[in-house]
Length: 121
Image (cartoon, rainbow, N blue to C red; front, side):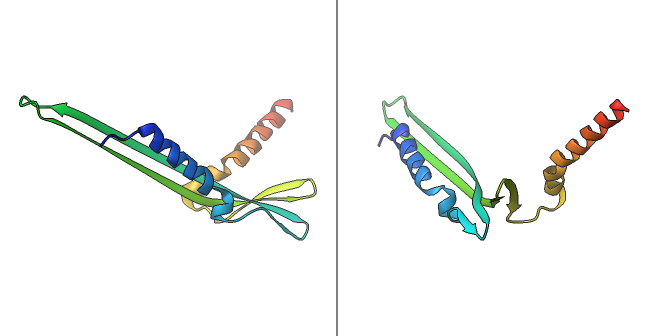
């Protein structure tokens, strides 16, 4: 039995296009009073495929193949807008090292602002 890898990959990709959407995971954009909320998700994919065939000295022929795929979908939070303001509201609180990495952009911004201020004085 011969497997057409491109055909399998096309079918999996089509499935992901239809199923791995924010609407499927946590819903569509909605309005809450004067706030517009847009759900945000993270999608991770992994594919693997292998195959082979061969003959032995008795002219016996054999072959085999295998494939696997995995998907992970995680709701991250909501982009929330009100007039010209926009913010991100996470669906969970980070702890430990993950929380430190999430704060790094703010810390770097404050550090660089302080450095610029010190350079001008």
